[in-house]
Image 1: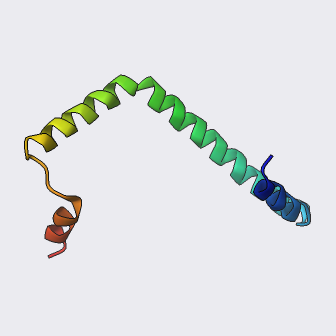
Image 2 (image 1 turned 60 degrees about the vertical axis):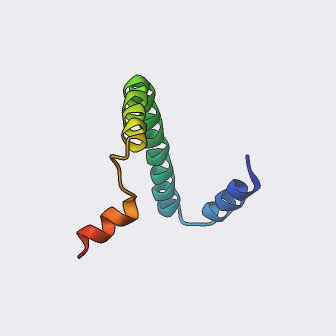
Amino acid sequence: MTELLEKALEKISRLPEAEQDAIASQILGELEDEAAWAKRFAAQAGKLRRLADEALAEHRQGETRPLDDLLRSTTR
């Protein structure tokens, strides 16, 4: 366990039980979400690679614009 995590858990341990449970629920929810995203990305790795390759090819062919330019043109 990292020093930072130990420090956080020490502070949490001094909170009332209901607050400890609320924080624990948030942490567990975040961990579950991260695991679900990792699983989805792993299942779609080939598709993501193909989309990345297509985007790079479009960029090399001059078919893309810098995001800053695009954002400036939409805010005018």
